Length: 265
Image (tube, rainbow, N blue to C red):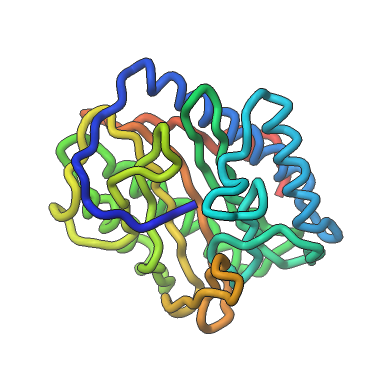
């Protein structure tokens, strides 16, 4: 889940705080894997939400999205042309759909946040490429999330990779800092120039989350005030991981390993 930010000085997390955030990151990652196990044609997005909320609460945490600024569910579930912030509903997943599942937890005073876009059954070649490129653009962004760099270095890495395949980067939405609050400074755009933006420091915890469209980059906000759609009706993919900035290489606090080692696509 993402939000806009004014620039503020960011206090790096202590190692004790990072350890608590790592617990949240692992729980979010495992929750997404549980959801991924049931993603299939014929399943409603409400059922995905039910599985996630039950799993989170069974592990002593609470869904951090539920009630956030009035958001009505544990998950943001966004299908096909919905970029982010879709509501779980009676919509029945169909063969060839893609579904972005964005999950947050609150546990021991800290937050976790991660997202994964799942294919539903078999998807066409362009859609598969969109998923692969979006995920790789995330890893390119993470590689730039080292102390001494700036948020523009992350955005530049994401943007140049995604656009090299003819896809477009949503600019109205961005990643964010995270900690005791779900959304903290700095904002982390998915586009930009090297050497610009907020400076990254050792111990800073951020969510990097490319939102990449198959068509044009333009989007619009639905009447419900939450769901963001592509303006041309083409599909959009969204992947997100939480990392802690380090001097040599960012450390992952959430991971896709639980999904990709346990869910068959």
